[in-house]
Length: 258
Ligand code: IPD
Ligand code: CA
Ligand code: CA
Image (tube, rainbow, N blue to C red; front, side, top):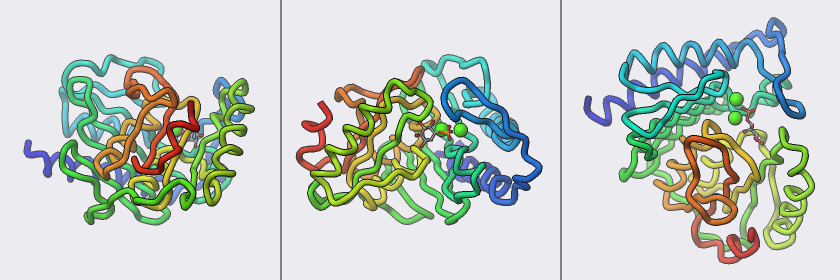
């Protein structure tokens, strides 16, 4: 299948998933708790993941499927693998805060190949194919060229890992002093897209899982930005790690993270 056709089919599935999120009857949505502070799952996380698993595997039957709400996480090293977060921003979803996205990364032989992140509330579809740039609703996007001192810093609080809270806020405080201001959206995938679209200059979070960044990291890179762990290493796709995404020019970013 031609790359464009493949991306189109994936975005169609993701748009449908977003529509389920948008029209959810949250009063009917029972909430279960998972391991970690404030870590919840609703029937919609499970329902959207089930729908995506069915439709994505129909598009690429040979692909491995890794989803947040599955217990068994298969290897992504060989061939195609989808890495899926059905709702990134579940706490926002529960609170009706209108800041949650669907995130689908497609991996080929262990490397990021396609990324799709959809915000159904703003109807924003972020996409990237490796080597072909990043797009928002079909229009090319680029990271900003601002220095950190003129920048906005996004961060995630690593909410499910209480031992990381103090360091997260200390780093956010350091960045707050060097930048214009800080923001916390509640969706790491959306934060990465905000860096890609040039709406903010730097994002960090001390612990994330592959489904949070598999799609968004490619979108940032294809928009001209840089994504590594806090220590400057490549992100892992088979287990979680910290994430530092920048526009690639905001000078003191990396130094401050060390
Ligand atoms: C979470 C969101 C949040 C981030 C957490 C993630 P979830 O994903 O991306 O912004 O701070 O670390 O786990 O649980 O809503 O899919
Ligand atoms: Ca997530
Ligand atoms: Ca999720």
